[in-house]
Structures are given as structure tokens and as C-alpha cells.
Amino acid sequence: MNKKTDFIVGMIFAIATLILIVLFLTNDTFFNWAFERHHNILSWYIRPLFIIPMVIFAFKKSFTGIFASIFALFTSMFWFPAPDVKNPQVLEFLAFEMDYLKGTWTAQKIVISLAVPLFFFMLLTAAWKRNWKWLLSVIIGAAVLKFLWSIAFGGEAGMSILKPALFGLILCIAGLSYFFRKYRHADKN
Picture 1: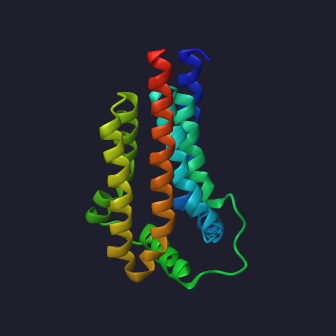
Picture 2: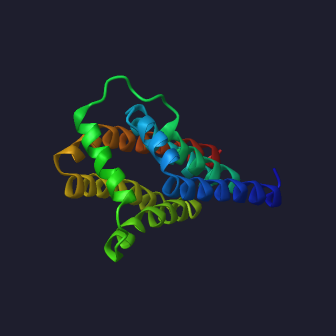
Picture 3: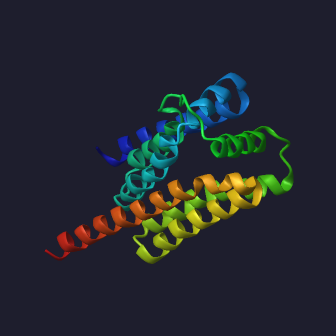
């Protein structure tokens, strides 16, 4: 795909993601439907894995790949059916998240929420510049901050994200380490 087409398709995915986020935050029916499916913890395990293709596409400087990966990450919260049996800790944590998203937006909440786009910016910039140490720091830092935020604001229910967060962190580091080693080996040959 040529650079111009890659950029246009990438921007289509970026706009689709923004539309999805606005719809999610403004349409209660869609919001509730999505969160019912987000109770399925498979979505908790799969979401961090989208960091791998996102980083690889940033490394390859592909806007389509980057923004398609971001779109997949956001939509993956509702890919799986609502579970028949729900973990009480998951219910409590997601109730907190729902209240957080639908509650009053204070200056503090806006600043804290800006951490999400800042994470994407730092992650993609580190990958684009092919700075492995910075990239690794961003991924580890984001996982730690997500966990701390979940505990600080969600209380004991925030512990429910520990296993998926650690699983995602380990797989991201392993997957990206493999990619970078393979790339360096191919680059030397």
C-alpha cells in the first residue's frame, strides 16, 4: 500500500475510533450493551495484546496498521458474549468504571483521563523512533499505573485486573522482544 493510501485508510480507522468513543460515552443503550459484554474477562485478556501489532505497525510506520489496531483494541471490549456467571469482584470493578465514565467530569478526572491518549502517543512515538528502552518503559509504566489507578480508585475490586494486566504485560514484552530480535537479525543479514 502506498503512503498516501496508508494514511487515508489509517485516518478512516482513527475517525471510526473517535466516533465509537463518542457513541460509547453519549449513548446509554450502547454503553450498557458494551459493558455487559465487557463483563466477560476474555476481553480483559485480549485488549492488551493489541499493543503488539500497534507497536509493530508504528515501527513499520503504517498508519493503517496503527489505527486499525487501536480500533480493534477499543472494540474488543464487546467482542465476547456477556458471561452467564459473573465474578462479584469483576462486577464491582466494572460498576466503578461505569460510574467513573458516566459521572461528573471534574478537572482532576479530565487530567487523569488524558493519561490514555498520552500513553498511546508515547507508545507510538517510541516505536516509530525505534527506541526499545523507551518503549519498554512506557509499556511497563502503563501497566503499573493502570493497576495502581484500579486499586486507588476501585478499591479491592481493582485487584480483579491484576492477572489480565500481568498476562498482557508479559505477552507484550515477550512478543515485542521476539519481533525486535527477529528484526535485528534480519537487518544484520
